[in-house]
Image (tube, rainbow, N blue to C red; front, side, top):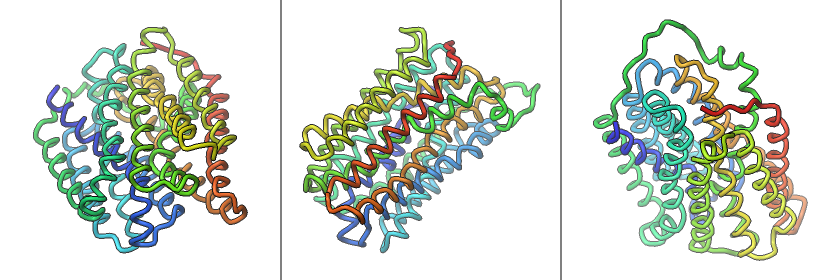
Length: 392
């Protein structure tokens, strides 16, 4: 089982890379195929929405077929295939198609790990294992910053993407060889995702998950690039450095949040306090969008650090799942988290286009985006106040 989890960590590293790498490629894609920030926001949004939509069939597949075949087949077809389409892209439409395929290919990896954690390990350590999985896998976020900028400068973005397609195919083959499915449980009860949606106790958790991951994932995955380039005239290398700082903060956040529920005896209040700080950082970026690159980098890092409450919220929801709906449960909560990012990318793309057309101030579109993220977090927190706290 440990070898299989190690393989899933590798695959999840690729998933983290693919959700964050567009920010660094912004200048190259703009110059080579005429991709605008709105085009890339659409493509990024497709990655997250397709990823989210796949959570329903992935959840059913995990419960019925297990993680080995589910993760390996989708990663090979969608992940490796989508990276190959990206490498061959001749227009922004091709980039969007590639990102949709990669989103489908990445969709089962983290949930396959969480399915194993929920079925094999004690419930009390779920949040710690979930946070560690994201923390280690977030090295892909780091690879999608300064190292990617170096590779693009040395070899070109197309050559880099062809290499990533090959690496993704190899990772899928490894999953098929080393992942072990947990022992199946006797199915004395039937159920579906509709049974989970009929549980009122889960809805405040869904609302919090919908907004909590969007600022860190959306900004790191795309907007940090156009923001640094448009407001501070940053080149690819500088964008890579800013992305690296934010990515490191996101990794630190996963390890910070992971064990807190066992230490403090609460999940609800950890999530509320952390996301209030994240909302304050977004609103500070709204108020000071062009103060300096250093100030913005520090605030972006704070958004990343506090935006890592994902595993605690998932553990909060998991505490209410019936055992026979574990796979569907973790994927349903993940659907709201990833879907929230996808929706926010479409919305912020429209915000950027609208404000940029109305204002000559370079920072104005990005200030509006930061305001949107900050207000969204505050609304989600207000709803989440109604949730019922539970630890294992």
